[in-house]
Amino acid sequence: MTPPMFSDGGRYIWKWKEASPGDWSYPMSMDGHIFKTEEILPLLGLLDYSNPNTLEGTLASSPFNIPRMICFSDSKIFNIPANKVQDVNGNRHGNLSAWDINEQYLKDKRLSLAKILSNPEAVENMSCHQDIKLEWE
Image 1 (cartoon, rainbow, N blue to C red):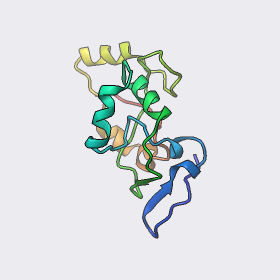
Image 2: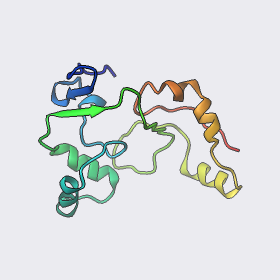
Image 3: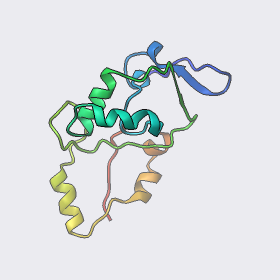
């Protein structure tokens, strides 16, 4: 996705309502955004939701009235959408099933963090959701 026009000198600040449709214009994501407790906590008791996906959708339908977002120059979060364990929406995802993951854990296998961190796709982190090959150890 095309990054927005950043403002404020060398800082990575943008007006999310003016960004191209997609990740840069989505201020209420539940997988990496940081919210002020005093702003988000009152909503959690008022909104109708049953899981993280429905909460995110509800928040996205009425985002905070804050015109700008800010980020680091280099991403600090790497989200690997390896699978999907809900049928509430059509999120992008890979094809690793929860059953396969569970089977590996029951065999005392763990995902290799070293393999993830040495993967050029993970190091470059060209997207907020990036499906990469996972290896077990």
